[in-house]
Amino acid sequence: MTTIGINTLVYMDALRNGTPQSELLATIAAHGITLAEVRREYIADNAEYDAIANAAAQQHMTLFYSVPESITVNGEPNPQFEQYLGEAARMGARNVKFNQGDIKDVDATVLQRIDNQAAARNLTLSIENDQTPQNGTFACTQASLDHITANGSTIGYTFDLGNWYWRDENAQQAFNRLVDYITVFHLKNVNGSQDKSQLATTMLQDGVIDWQPMLDRLSASIPVFLEFPIPAEQVAEQVDIVRHAIAHS
Image: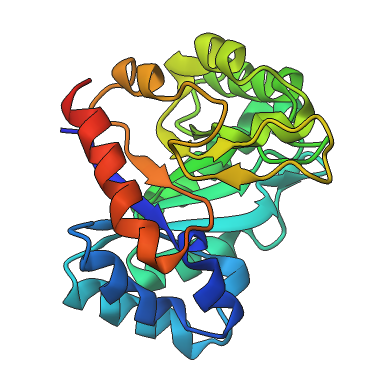
């Protein structure tokens, strides 16, 4: 059965009000969710890494770690790459997600070093298509994944469904062409506005993306994360919608 995860972005209102992510893990667990993705940009201080680790252990929860930095910079691993892996290991996380950076152009030996560093900490890695011109177009994402695969790297791919709209890309076509690379799926829907100032995420049932058939094509080993702001009183409903879609896929 496909594992449903919650990225802490779901609780954007709480994050903006200063609620630590360690406190959100119990809230996530209350929905019967055993997989959470914490975000580095909302970790307020050094002590929070240990607080997250303790909360995850208490809730018997698997953690993923989202780092909004490039995995490679100027043809080399990010200068803070080892630090980020250390933070993930300290929390007991399993996977670390990065932006693509210039990974499509790096030498095979750089990919090997990245793989080795992650393996040494029992971590898996992924890159995603974000909302930026540098890391979010179909062309750069395809090139990054082709390069990773051609060189035998173990770096995976977090497919972010909604982000394609910020780059005027066709999300369905992107899914069709990249589905075999996907190791993590970030699920969100959008209003489809052509005016980028009005483009926004919606509740899953309200947007323009026909996402449910996509879940049918994903292996059960690929976790599906809710990763968009949801009013606290609607989280249970959104989780139930995904559960229903998975049960009927």
